[in-house]
Length: 78
Image (cartoon, rainbow, N blue to C red; front, side):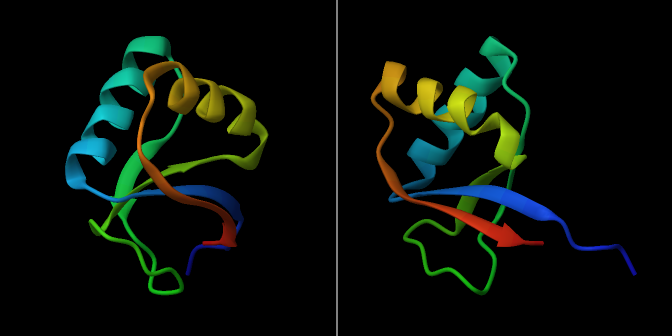
């Protein structure tokens, strides 16, 4: 069984928002990936962006610079 580590989770109201996050993060070299929303969180579209907590500033910059519609930001042990 894999050891759980702290992760940054960004949820979105729509799948379009989650897909846009993936596009912009890949283009700008921001680490992370799309995953299904963990059971501990309730989110509108069912997809979220997962990254390391130390990448929070880069992730927030992408969200702000592209006007992405974020539902919430969490730090969870996954």
